Length: 122
Image (tube, rainbow, N blue to C red; front, top):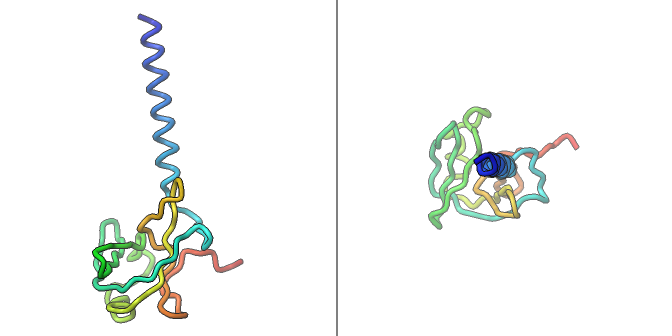
């Protein structure tokens, strides 16, 4: 009985530890341009998402978001005037295993950067 209890506790702790590292690897912080996939998309709709996110919808039925963009001082009406029905360049952050997320690390319209999370001090 003791051996099965110890095994169950050890297995539970191992699973919790694995879950912790899995979730931690999906958190996007301090993204660098070389850690992103760069795509060009035409923005067809801009909406407010959950947690103050700004969601950009493309003509290919895909959506991408700026995490907590409204809290960062971005404005839906201003963004609509700037990028709606235009083709923008997105830097999308990669997460665990090189999988590309829908998280926008940088958005540019031609040579104008609309939004960036990149450290511009260096």
